[in-house]
Image (cartoon, rainbow, N blue to C red; front, side):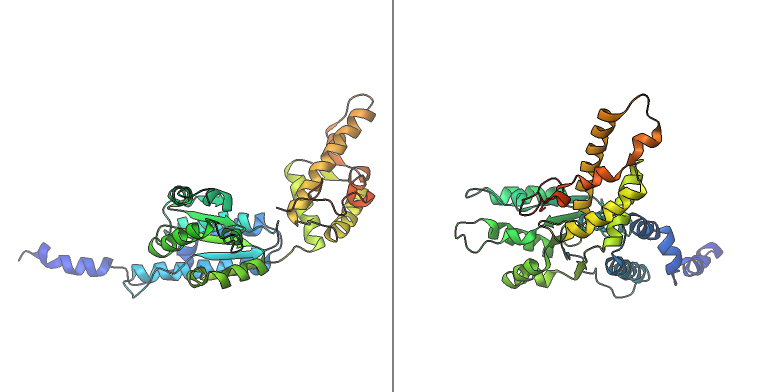
Length: 318
């Protein structure tokens, strides 16, 4: 045996991975970047962010154990996001898809968002191909099913949702290394859905509840939305928006940040009309960017037109 051949085992032993720096992995994998984006892009949601960080830690440790040759099992990653509309569920799902991709748990890291209509057909033989086509698009990433409880309609004997459910359950079990499914919707309806479909509950490992935003958080969200579009609130408009948020929360179809976005869209429309009708001479950037009190208080939330309305200018029950 030559001296070179004799040295080979020693070299392999020296280069074999025997320890992993989790902090270095946290930074080099991009997980740190994703979690920092989550903190920066989403206001509030402290319990949600805590659960995402905990999940990221679990995935980092499992990946490290695999590389060190320790006994490991790919963790079940299917999830349930519960909460009212406009609480950031879709945004967090996008961040989760990115996180899973960076850690190597999904191949592509894309998010496919669907509802019942995308999965369930209208006649015999229609549901299976629709569901399978969506699953094909989602493979290698995350499938986000919003208002998932509408898949199951026991009051309709001719409903085809059960067929979609059975296909989903099979794929969630057999192809969990290539697809993560997130079911989302109102908490009470999701609870009833899981009771009626125990197969889903047994495959969901992570249940994350999204709380409503506080009034202060909604004001901060509004200011952030305006800032992104180079708008700002005058002091009087800020006070009016505080009153708006307090009143809007008590009215029908309140949808957290989604209602605030709708309200700001309407305020910008009123501002544009106010400037167009009243402006005399050139307007500078400050005038074109300022949302004033009248742009907020003209809302039907204050005039009483929103009560009982479905949707409406600042409504929306999505």
